[in-house]
Length: 317
Length: 255
Image 1 (cartoon, rainbow over the protein chains, first blue to last red):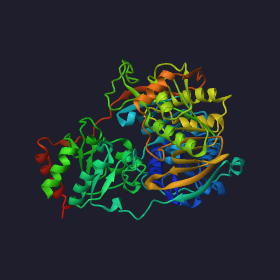
Image 2: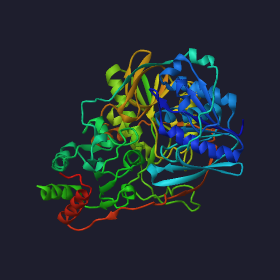
Image 3: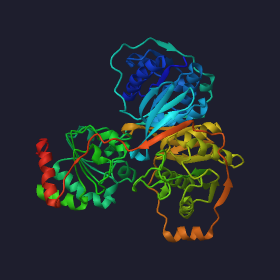
Image 4: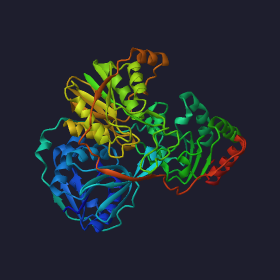
């Protein structure tokens, strides 16, 4: 049991995240090295167990407090399972759920944590993780001390588990702590569906922090209109309220895969790249030649967007 | 309601990040440090909660480089008290150490709510808010985009991918990890910041953070291997505009 790799299933409203199956794939590989099993912990929604292919075992826990996600309930449930099973390593997706639970488990279970993990290997008895730091500008190769550890893993870091049937689910009794919680779920607010669906667009014109102010959006809007493209944005622009949240591309926004993705003033933080790196043709305009956006873009220019945008609009006109 | 906002300074990512001699940390000597952007959001959200429900905002630094400026800036924006925790050293300070030090200082303080940035660019060993919450035994919610205070509880919006958000109610005391404030962080004029600096009044408190080992060892830091790089287009704006439009046309998406 102390050699098992435990994966926390990440799901919301009956939908299992892609990352969960990516972690199962990695867990299976690591379990081969540690001589343990790839075990998935599924909190709430036991019906999802059938979708977890490729694992050696699935542990389900059902309780009214786990039905709608709250960090406090999931925190207690996960700690209970981990204390009971004592796995070698716990893998959690770096989603909202992973950001909530990873570090809390590190304190509660007294195990080291590596956050923003993008690579994982067993080297003899040691687990070595590679993780993003400084906005993805650097990677850190990190050794987890001791005989237990936790990694929160960035989406898309590993291929999904390939095939394999879904193992029989084993129910774990919920801990008493789930009956005495200080956090309650009220409601889930869906995004405003009245706006354009940027995930359906063939071409997107996307703006980032480099746009500087809301007034400067007018020029880019004019170009987008001429191209027949909706405007999308990276997080700083929607946080500032310059464009609605429905236009946000990235980990915390929408994932898009248009034929053409044209960016202005986007540096390419990991948050943003996670939502657009699969676009067929990426063309980036950013004055910083070292901006990470140029590592995923097919074509780039360091021209000032305030020179390039009007020139493009004029050429089209 | 008394709100504590822990703030940290992180390297300004606009600058080049050089490594130290053994390659296990960034070379901190010539780096410019700025307020972590999520902590800036947490300060703003704390001030919004205070304005709506009354109370007091206490900003707490960890002795990071140039943290005094960030503390005074928070005071200029409306924070009531500024505290700098000292004794944590000059190098990279793990979140585990920060959480232990802050928990140590919080003992004996009257606090209802801790609002902290949900993450930072150097929290390799995990995020501060859940570590602090687990240490204190308080409930915690992260990735929060709005906090509304009530008497002994708060309502928060927690963000999920795709623009969905859950509304949760949390009994106080609690720790909240702020992703974004309800409005962009306010501006503090240089004059107001200078006034705060001249008035002084940052309280110092010695802490140890002892016994909070992150349990990880950084073997090396390195630049990610570039799997590809954009073909760079140069020339006049008109030339580049023409080439980009040709590329777009080649995908057949221009009517």
